[in-house]
Image: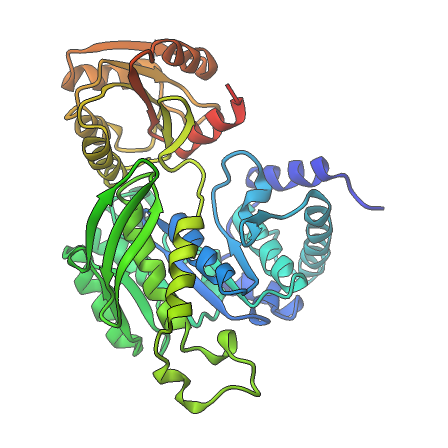
Amino acid sequence: MTMKYQDCVDYVLSIPLFAAKLGTDNLNRILDIMEHPERDYPVVHVAGTNGKGSTCSFLASILKQADRKVGVFTSPHLMKINERFRIGDEMISDDMFVEVFEETMSYVQLAKEEGIAHPSFFEFVFLMGTIYFKKQQVDVAIFETGMGGRMDATNVVQPILTIITSVGLDHTQFLGTTIEEIAREKAGIIKPGVPLVFFDRKDAATAIVSEISCEKGANLHFVEKKQYNLLNITEKTIDFSFQSGYYKYCNLKINKTALYQIENAVLAVKAYELLLKDKNIFCNLSQCVDARENYSLTDTDIDIIQAGLLNMTWRGRMECIGEHIYVDGAHNIEAIDAFCRTVEVLFPTEQKILLFAVSADKDYEGMIKRLCEIEFREVIIVRYEGSRSAEVTAVEEAFRRFSGGEITGFEDIREGFLYGKSHVCDSVLFCVGSLYLAGNLLSLGV
């Protein structure tokens, strides 16, 4: 008997209550039983502290523009779990979710009969993703890591290309307390002989990523800030150029969201250049020639890249959700700094109001210290829905250490948002601090 959609969702969301992480060895044993659906299509594997989801979406948008069917597995979801499984920019349907869930459960039951424990929440949804993309017969699948890389469930894939977007101090209770330790975890996705695209911030992570790439014989392709130039900010777009080392792009545009999205866009462009050389994705075997590895960009390729970047949408990242109201999922110091730089450049003279919620396990004092370098007319503190949300009083105390401005607190997120919305007038309201906050606000529809 086919289960109902909501029953499937409820089961998946309940998994953290009873399942521990299996680890990649046991996960591979389940994939053995499943006959490894993740090996039925080429895979791009993406890790990093910030920018993973946006980079995945930029690359998927370019590949879609090139008429390729692209599976995209990302996390977390903002409003609906289906968001984690996409073909291009279309998330999985409820009916297909049920079908994939039931097939995954059948394999989990077979695994349990062989003494393998039930997979964790993230492992389970990853297994669902591998099955879904096989069913959809994708040309390529992009898998975003959940956290870290080395021990991440997604690290069982055998990619043709890997990407590391950034390395910052986040999830320190799991990944390490220094940039070097975290970089080593992220670099765990590097595979022997598989090319890597890495955004080089000239910090301690560079040496670690370079060292491991050398050990694995992975060709390392750096992308860095000096390779792109901001050309113009219009009412609708951010225009920039990019010297990839392979080609100079003089007229690239992304939607006017956040300046930090340029970094994610150029990572995707560099990744696409490398994928263009892969005959498994871009050639019919009858047309392929050995010279494909020396492939040169055509005008059509450039048109594809330009259209792919401009057509990309990624919710909850400096997204305008109402007149003069923006929501951004920045949830650690590195992301907050990028958010602040965007506000300082794009909104230099406007009066500003901040609505803030944050997870209790984050270094929110460091986030708040950076936010208070911007003059906000008022700060509104709320709690997002969920046990991880920091207490309003604790966050308020942190703000008062760095700001003498007006601070108002609300236990109810809806009440706090409506209060902020009513105070916008000639100001701009920025809602930031957590992807959970972003998801809650988008779900409220207020």
